Length: 336
Image (tube, rainbow, N blue to C red; front, top):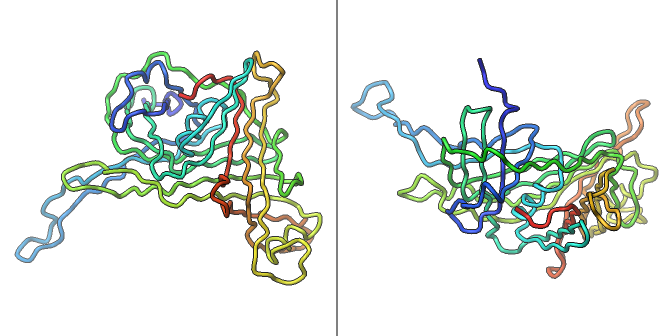
């Protein structure tokens, strides 16, 4: 008969206490609609090597330690994203006015970030899982001019149990979507004629900290953080190329320093937030105060129009200034 993937579901909430699944999950969590993806086990079958005095066949096998990881792909919506951003960045603040909440997320310098509690159903009833001590390892956004704003979230979890009873009436994130016509990319104060963009945050969690006497990871610790991405343009002059390759738009020969400028990516909906006064769109703005462009070639070809995918890297030369700030506007009074 088979079991349709579309009947599955996944929900999140911030986990207050390590190694403890929240008792309030059924009432406080938020469920996300997915394009695809799941957390899958990372576990090896431990088999013996050939032994002198033994036979030619493998003698035995055991199961080793285990963790769970996977990428969830989704159309960007404005409620569950706050839970994921809080876990990815580590901290968030909110200000509520009439019908509108402004959430501000900045990266936490600590290597210990908030855990997520997760429930996941595969198919209609194929299997139901509960995850404890999950972290957001990667956070990705992308869009094309004639497409939707889409995201991918890379998760790692310490513990899983199967066969759970899930909330029969989950709270779904049904907030509005974003399309490319409502997205702008601004570099050094100038709005670029971008055809597409991507944004990536990577926490680089250590995922192999297994301990003797346990099936599970001993801890999940974030290592060096990275902000990277790209945008595609048809250049109208060589200013960006000179900035990326020479180190400045006015230079005519290579220098050794990089030109670090602000990058702002703003995405909003056509629809207003219900009840918002004054009228306010759902929106997300990603601001990176210091970004360096990676060198690239102009690469003409035949009669093709010259286009370039320009990659960038976020920097933090002054510790007092966050490498990235994300501001989300929605009607969510509290982050799950």
